[in-house]
Image: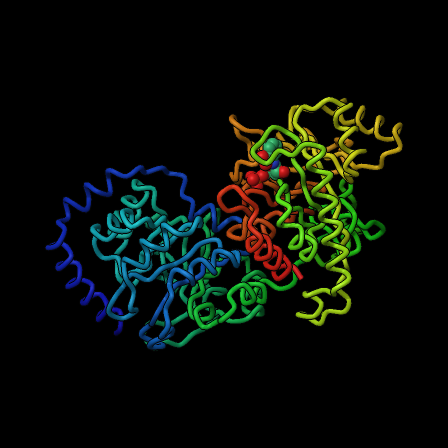
Length: 536
Ligand SMILES: O=C(O)c1ccccc1N[C@@H]1O[C@H](COP(=O)(O)O)[C@@H](O)[C@H]1O
């Protein structure tokens, strides 16, 4: 059987490797690294209601060479952009043409956890995985007995590595359970004859109880395959060949996920669990503190609004006019992105001229896509303030013509009400948004019934009010019963994952579309088109 051949080759390889670097040396190097036991691979596999581990694989014994041209780093980065929650990297050189170098470079280049996919038959390989930057290893029940599986799982645990314990039949699933696996993967490919049967995962799913993560591996190709998994309480797919052969990985992942929808009240145009509808596109997300009855919910296509914040550079206005984010942010608070009221006025003026120019000379995107139904969005302007006086905020709203005010400091509900009253009194129609730094769900809950027109959830920092480029744990916002804007370290690397995880009504991009502290028009274009591609 092929497994016997691979194991025999692996034994020879490890013996050679041990001559180059002794077991003791590899062990000492691995043990010198921090072993934080927060297991990001496991967290990642629970991120969404369905999660993809995408594999970087040049060849396999069943298919031969899969990718003659193999830009492994670009492939991994593209997986990350597409919204994969983790990446699996083959390191086995003889049968899969893998390499430790691929794992090391990929682990250093992406922010999602990486699995070492190899035929682990020696503790030496577990220490290597740790040194190379993996966050998880594969243990194969067909080649290890229960005591060895248990020993390796415990060693991996002590190093802060997760184990994906792979089984193919009932007996192997029992072995995985006995060794205390927290993640069990069922291979749909029979390694004896290479036949593939997706129903294998479905059949074996019922043997795995409780909190154990169940992964379906191999032979998955279509949204229908993924739906079968979803219908059978399987939340993770590990896929290699389908992704490797796909030229457009963002489109492939979108195809497999299926259309994005959001539940809204039948008689309203605002989202209930985050997310905006196309009908609500030009409006800011509205307040909804009440949970409606399920009967009154209908599913609508999900199209998040986009805000590009921290603008001051006039050279970006043509790009903004063309890309048409829903909101353009100007920061009046002390910051490296701060603008004065005068500078903000100049920026808005320059934008309006660019917009006229753009409208007069036709839409490049309309021409590119041939989408005659595409809405022309009139971007609105939002000013960001931190603990500013009511008078100064109202002055800026009036002078610049702001459509919204984002309060990013310690402003209270009382302050919001006073500001709203003052705006009405002065006949200004700007919305009032409240930014909230999230350390836990409690921070979001405190503002659930706020009169703010929009809640902007951002990362907490003890040193800065915002614009840190840091993300936070989006799980804290899951099912939040009011629409909201997601901010904090969003960029082309994580925006697909972010929107699939929490379906925010709006995405707030700031430092993630900058290079060396300046807005980067290529990054703005890339992220705008990525969000549209993932959601429309
Ligand atoms: O960007 C700033 O410098 C800033 C300063 C003070 C308050 C808010 C600020 N920015 C806001 O922070 C969030 C997240 O930004 P990032 O993506 O992490 O860079 C966003 O709402 C900005 O408007």
